Length: 190
Ligand code: SF4
Image 1 (spheres, helix red, strand yellow):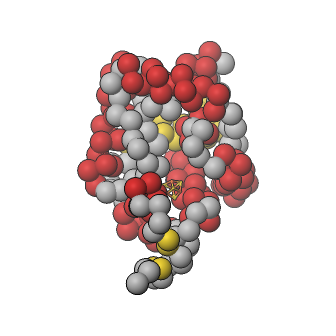
Image 2: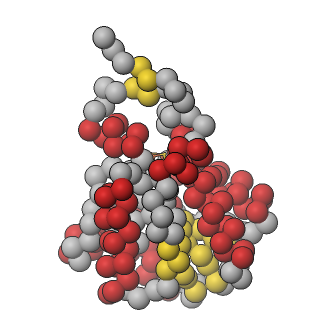
């Protein structure tokens, strides 16, 4: 099977990718993440995947444009988990379409390897995109490899991010009292 694997960052790849290869799957990566903000953080994570490639060669298709506007247009709500559902749909739809256009048998995402993602919501989004785009979604649950994968990433000096990606997750990470509501509304206490 030829699989196009959406890649959000390098640390989650280290251990699970070896497992997938053991299953005899032919894997190419797809870096498409308009959800990563701000620009310098986007560049750090992009570069980190390229550094990963140096010691673990694999073909990766890169979308290197910074997609702040694309992300803001794609999310209907600013609150999680709805925001994350929109975000998963945006990235998985692009992955499925790229996979279909380039002769892959299935698509998947390294987000499934992360213990920090909304796993059930992600799986649901993958299944919905699969039905809509007419291409199988390859579901795996490698969350148990998450700690090991990050240990390997640390040893390999790969960049380890401290928040999920979007400007909202950065805010939630560092200012837990900030509360975003819906598009155009910001709850600011006096
Ligand atoms: S928290 Fe993460 S998954 Fe949710 S919208 Fe932000 S970048 Fe996307």
